[in-house]
Figure (cartoon, rainbow, N blue to C red):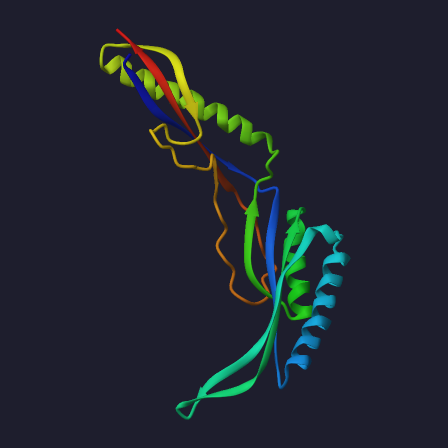
Length: 210
């Protein structure tokens, strides 16, 4: 039986539900223990800032701790200039209005730098389910247009999938979320989530009737 396979698409612009910050700490010292001790002290300061803004311990995670030799090119040679220790915290801020204050206090109090700022939509946001329905309706509109152009009628749905309908489908995420641009190091207190673009794609195969 003849069939037509189409990809339905839907896009919506939403206010983000939360922000994800990556706050980094770095310190260069004459020896490794001193560098690490300074990072430990500033990490406690940074966690104190987060707690003061009402964030819970589960709202942030340590991305790792590094300590190593640091060299600089001087007089045509690599010269050991000390030991650099570093760490970073990934912080989830669920109140968008707090983002600027968290960044400002983290930078001024603990000397943190902002590696990235990303705006997110929660998995249980009702707009996600609505977007799936819009993508499915778009697939039917597309398939109907093809069928009518060929002098055929659209039949029943043979298959529906979030992955491309091919012989060997490869995984493809249903939702694609826009990422906010990375921020440069330094204090950035005037921040806005704006609108985050959320999209859905669904692949549907319809039977074609004479």
